[in-house]
Each structure stands twice: as C-alpha cells, then as structure tokens.
Length: 128
Image (cartoon, rainbow, N blue to C red):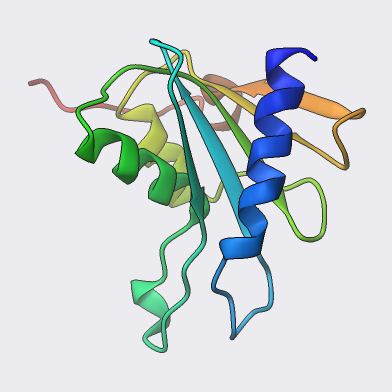
C-alpha cells in the first residue's frame, strides 16, 4: 500500500474519536513528519463555538508538543468524504513549511493531492 493511501486510512480511522455534537461534521487527520512519525487528530467542538479546534490543528499541536517541527504530508477526511482545510488551518500549517502536501478524497482509491501553496498562495511567516 502506498504511503498516501495509508495516511488517508489513518485519518479515516481517527474519525471515530471526533467530537462534533453541534455540527455532526466529523473530520480526521493524519500528519506525517519528515522523520516518518505519524500524528492523528480530530475536530473537537465546544459550546463556545470559537473554541472549536479542527482536526488538522489537533494533529499539528500533538506533534509539536512532542518536539516535531518538520512535516511532509497531512491527510484529511470527513465523515462526508473529501474535505479541504479551512483558512485558519491553512495558515497554521504554512507556519511549519511551505512545501506541505495535503491529501483528501472521497475514498482511498480516489485521492487528490494539493500543495499548501495551491491552497494558500499568499501564506506568510514572520521572521524568527
């Protein structure tokens, strides 16, 4: 099985842990680090809707909290099939690299791959 398909399936598996009692729109993500480690994430809604966190950011925060800073690919899937990251997630991901690949699709046999620059052509990072 190729790595893209494997990541997609890991993201789909993560869906069962999503907490979306308000929208019922579940999202799972699987983030691949450059060292080959994978971190999964799900969306977690909150009664204060602004406090909701997306699956992509959950995966990134888990990885960063474990010392990871370099990422190659993230797979994102919803309970409805293909889904693309929201604008906040796009900028959040851009912070960690402008070559990130994003995988989504209706199922593991019909994947689409985007570059973060395709989805956020004018992304920015502050000088460090």
